[in-house]
Amino acid sequence: MTEAMMAFLPWAFARFGLTELTADHFNDNPSSGRVLRKLGFVKTGSALRGSAARTAKAPTSSYQLRRADLVAPASRA
Image (tube, rainbow, N blue to C red; front, side, top):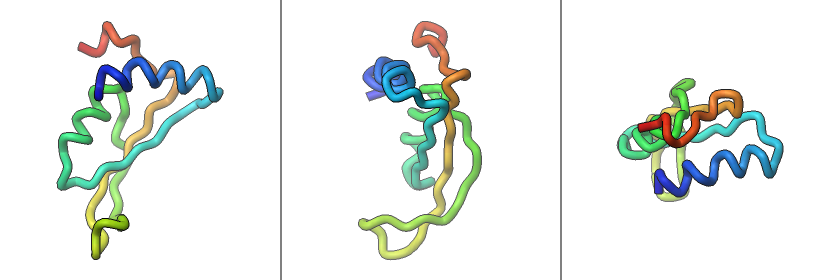
């Protein structure tokens, strides 16, 4: 998944003229946070959020990746 996203992100920024992307993950799924950080996303905050699968709100972490901060795949090792 990470390798596919490394190829997708530069394309998405260019194709859609994006300046930034945001993402969140539930804190009880730390693997998603590791993937986001590996892709160059930076943590920007946290909040309580719900989802269709949860009966109560749960802690989440929010991340941002700015186009200007997009790192070439070779330098993400």
